[in-house]
Amino acid sequence: MEKVHVIVNPYSARGKTEYRWESIKSVIKHYFSEFKYIFTEKPNQATEIAREVLSEGFNLIIGIGGDGTLNEITNGFFSGNTKKVINDEASLGMIPSGTGSDFIRFLKIPRDFKKSVELIKNSNQKKIDVGRISYPGSGPENPPRYFINIADFGLGADVIKKLSTIPESKRSPLSYYSGLLSTIKNYESKNVNITINGEKKISGKYLIGAVANGGIFGGGMVIAPDAKIDDGYFDLVLVKEMKKFEIIRNSHHLYRGTIINHPKVEVHRVKKLEVSSEDDINLEFDGELGGKVPVNFEIIEKVLNFRV
Image (cartoon, rainbow, N blue to C red; front, side):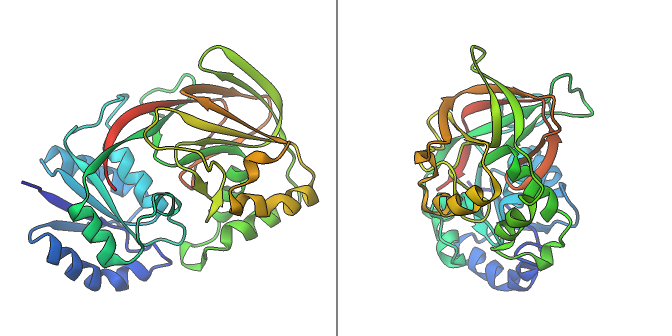
């Protein structure tokens, strides 16, 4: 029997989720006669809640929010320094209610509340991959983090850093592109050293390094059109140094999913990679700013049950 717990981020979708809740709740009640729910009140609380309710025996967690909420709940399926979920039988479903919701968009989950709840109720759970991030020398004070969609180092992370100064209530689906345009004014590509699967070494000056489990980030940019969430590999997309107007001129390729055909873009299928640099390089994952290079990435194959 499914024991359902709903985690609601009322601040998502520029605060609209709080006002939508009563309508969403009535839809959930139509498909799940019994469930508990809780509103988050602060950053990373969804991670704490997910761990707690999983330990209490809940086996279906439904998140309501955007990519940030999804990331927090995904992290809550793990505890400590492990590569295993807390409960291998538990599954995760999402009702999209965010400004971006790029992973939801990639999976073609309907944004209509009724259709998304119906999908959660009636679909089979699918074992999907999750990315694991660790920092050299990290200990209990800096544990590994997990991401379900895309992590990136370089320009994308600096855009997220700029956006983090804007209240969520004032962001829109175009905020990322606006942030991109303002960030590239003073941005310089970074010297990066990458080791793939412990063997192949790559060095160069790169604008973006995207470690993709899913394919879409930045409010609709298709950085990795061939990515699959259950193939046991990241699509590592590296964009070489470009001048400011060259970035703008080619930005439409990101939205069309054709950026990987550009001569300054290279794609590698990897299971793990190590990234280092003498430059100061920020990191973001699932649209959340977190840490800096040096950093290690590893794919955890088919570890999370997702309703899709």
